[in-house]
Amino acid sequence: MDLNEAMIGDLIRDYGPLTEHVAAAVRAIPRELFVPDGYFMTVAGSMPTAFRPVMPEDDDWREQCYARVPLVTQIAGTINPRDVHGEIVREPTSSMSDPSLVTLTLEEADLRPGLRVLELGAGTGWQAALLSRIVGEDNVVTVETDPTIARRAQIHLYGAGHHPEIIEGDGRAGYPAGGPYDRILATFGVARIYPAWLEQVKPGGIIMANLRGRLEPSGLVRLVRQDDGTAVGGFISESSYMQARQEAPSAHLMLPDPSTGRTRPTSLDPKTLHDNAARLVTESVAGGLQWLAGLDVGDGPADWFVDTDTGAYAVVRETVHGFSVTEDPAHPVWGAIETALAAWRDAGEPETTRLFVTASVDGHTIHFP
Image (cartoon, rainbow, N blue to C red; front, top):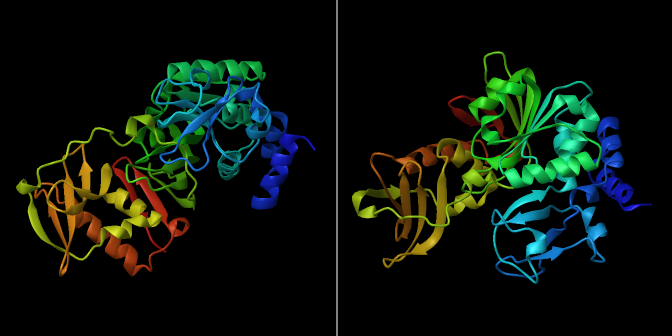
């Protein structure tokens, strides 16, 4: 059995049968065609995480192309595998996604020939090729924010015999000129469902997206567009795409001055946010927060929550009586989090895949069973 067939067999064994359209597409389009310039693999046991390049001339290159892991193809926005000799410790910025995540997305999108599909985040082009095979290349538009990645995706796609429309731009704005669409598939993590997506998908159409803000929860959500302009659905997995680079946590965070805030007791332990579902609920009411756990700036450790976009912040400390929180009275973000998580606890702390979502142009709301 060849490597592609073995990968398909593993997917079917672990996740159940693939639909005919998806199985045929994966079988017909080898992943190796989309990483001809190599990729990065994590270095086992490295801390912080280090990456090493794997090139086509390396013995394990082809085998790893079909492993059920994402293949990082760009690091720090500009660094490609051929640029590195040895190891590198920087943040990945583009990849070919894990095949199990890609096939899950395609299956849940309920694809069939003739549907109009907008893909957001072209990456290497492999998913765009699968989409072209399933719905027809004339029905596929893929948007990529990085011009270099967009050009490489086009080369890979053309080399594999597929010619969808490739647009350079910010996928969060969609691509209205090619719409309306039956399906919108976002292959990067975002803090919200963007109004442009709701406007560009047809009523009854499906949006697949990864809700993943700066608290770094992860939830793959499937939403169906309603006649009133909203979209409703729920989380189907805690699987994760790479975060949209425009929304990545800041590496140069300026801390606010908590002496300007108001301090009060709180019963909410920040450790509650170690739960993925709790972070998703939190981001539905306080998107944009970054969490610096146990940070000590000279007056003892505290958990800092900072939103660089709005200026909101909350500094939570453990006290002899429980916890205290200091927050900006103009942006009482911790109060909104307390209310949302109290409702989540009252509902029995449902896990991610039991959460429901309603998205509108004003943001998204999470509901409990």
